[in-house]
Structure formats: structure tokens, C-alpha cells
Image 1 (spheres, rainbow, N blue to C red):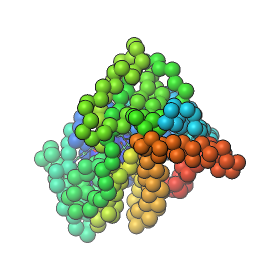
Image 2: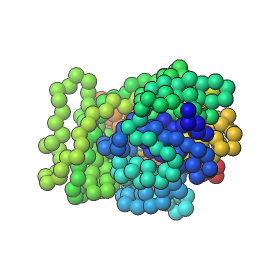
Image 3: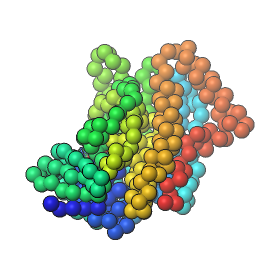
Image 4: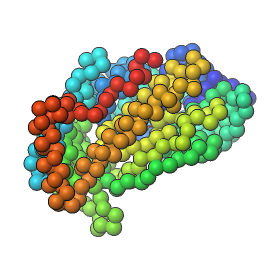
Length: 358
Ligand SMILES: Cc1cc2nc3c(=O)[nH]c(=O)nc-3n(C[C@H](O)[C@H](O)[C@H](O)COP(=O)(O)OP(=O)(O)OC[C@H]3O[C@@H](n4cnc5c(N)ncnc54)[C@H](O)[C@@H]3O)c2cc1C
């Protein structure tokens, strides 16, 4: 049976960052990924300055074509501007916000992985003892590793195999539409319209819209709302969720990224949280300091989840009087001498998670 220092299950963005970092540290790493190619549908679009820095350390230039530094605008119930923010440049002078194409990013991260990668191979089962983990793979082989890290997404088979509880809640349904083509845009816009809340943003070579859907409503057709001449490259419905694994470690098995936690995308922090996990674990594992992992990462993930849920609640208000109150309160907050400038710089979003120095 072949043996490795670390078996990474899943080569999405989180598995790729982890594998690249562990092999750069000299560990013998095997990555198994059940798909033959990167997930073709863009999900994440936004990265803050710290996440850009981490991604760039793994795959230099991987965000070179990102749309950078656009203003983030909040429009109220009648479409009136109620406030805008511009995240300041951060670590290494990187823009506070970069908007990217996830499949392109994932392909560039994968190309930076110097470890052995088996594509089209899934983890089927695992067992562990005090010295390591034995994994049965879908190609019929079994491998042994000192550590196994589940980077296998929200539906994690690794998490299920070691019996870690997964708790939290389902949230609302949203329709996500990406188009290719030139679309005039004033920035990243939260449209807090109680009739149909939506978000839209420029992307490299195109634009994205996200519309809230109500359970039980007749099918919503976004076509009349799209500009003429654009090509729809994806139109997919998601039910967002906020969930967390009760522990990110069981013996010699660890979890990272969506396998450990999910949040709605309103603060653009889900992928970023996973990249930070991978960066942290990539430093702590070779040093024998895995005990620090969850304590280091947990608080920032919790904070970003709270922020994402708060932004969702602000945006998703459907009752007109509540929406009018929200607009008045938010508008007043943006105009207040100290609070206003703080909100204008991004308010409670803190991109410094403490992993950069690891
Ligand atoms: C609409 C939408 C918008 C979003 N916007 C943002 C955003 O702007 N910013 C942000 O930071 N985040 C955002 N996110 C979240 C982000 O997309 C995820 O957090 C991120 O993709 C998670 O990465 P991951 O590597 O943990 O998991 P995944 O991307 O799910 O990758 C898991 C990988 O594991 C593989 N796998 C699964 N099971 C097995 C197995 N048994 N054996 C082998 N391989 C396996 C899968 O094939 C997959 O390649 C958004 C999400 C959605 C849905």
C-alpha cells in the first residue's frame, strides 16, 4: 500500500491551496479529486485583500484579470442611493475587493499543485488508528497517510465518515445568472427592493445578477431584466445555508473550507474562509501544531458568517414599512460623522484573520 504524509480529499480551491502549501513545505502529499475537470460553474466572485495575497502566494498572477476596487452601493426600496462603501487597499497595497471567475482561478491553483493529483478518483471509505488513516479509493486502490484532510465541500463524505455533526440552517433561495458581454455597471450593487431584492456586480468579461426567489412562487424568468446582446453563460438556483461542523478534527482526520463551514455569499467570504483554513493548516500540519487550527480559524469564520447573515437580513426585507425603516436607519448611519466614514471603509468586514504571518 502506498503511503503519504497527507491525503487531501477534494481539489476545489481549498484542497488546491492546501496541497500546494504542504508540498512546498516538503511533505509527501496525495490529492484525490472525484471530477476530471474543475467545477465549470462560477460560484465565488469576490476576494478581499488578504485572500488575494494568499492566492497570489500560491499561484502568482492568478487574479491578474480580476475586476478591482469597484464601489459597493446600497440602493433602497425605491431604487434611491442610501450609502456606498469602498474597501481601502490592504495588505501589500492590494485592492480591498477583487471580482474574479472561479473556474479560471481554480484551474490556475491546480496548476500550482506540485503534489501527486489523481483526477476522477473519489474517496470511498476510511478508517483510522493512532498512527494514521487508511483510505479506500474509487480506483480500487487503498492508501495510507499520516493525516487526511477533507476539502470535499459542503456535502463532505469525509465529515460523514468520521461522524462529525453538521448543524445550522437552510436560508432563502436565490437565482444566480452570469452573462458574458459588455454591461455598463456603476459597481457592486445591493438592490434592497422589497418586491424582488437583488445583487449585481461586474465580472471579468461579463456581469452577474442574483435575485431572491420565494418558495412556492411561479417560475421567475430573468430574461426581460437582462440587457440586450449579452450571452447567458449560467442560470442556476441555489438555496443558501449557514452550517458548521461541530469539530474540525477527529483523530487524524481534519476538515477545511466548505466541509467545515458554509455561509451565505452576501459578504463574499465563503471561499476566502476556506483559503484561510488551507493556508493555516498548511503551516500548522508540518510543524505538528494541528491543535491550534480550529482555535485560530474559528473566531474569524464565526464573525464573517454573522456579517453575511446580517447583510442577507438587510437585503432580503420584503415588508414595505420595514424596508422604509431600514432605508432611513441605514441612510442615517452612512451620514453620521464617525459611523459613516467607518461604514464607508467596509464597516465590520475585517480581512485580517491572523493567518498571513503563519
Ligand atoms: C452563488 C454563490 C456565490 C458565492 N460567492 C462567493 C464569493 O463571492 N466569495 C467567496 O469567498 N465565496 C463565495 N461563495 C462560496 C464558495 O464558492 C465556496 O465557499 C467554495 O467554492 C468552497 O470551496 P471548497 O474547496 O471548500 O469546496 P468545493 O468548491 O465544493 O470543492 C470540493 C471539491 O471536492 C470534490 N469532492 C467531493 N467529494 C469528494 C470525494 N468523496 N472524493 C474526492 N473528491 C471529492 C469535489 O468534486 C470538489 O472539486 C459562493 C457560493 C455560491 C454558491
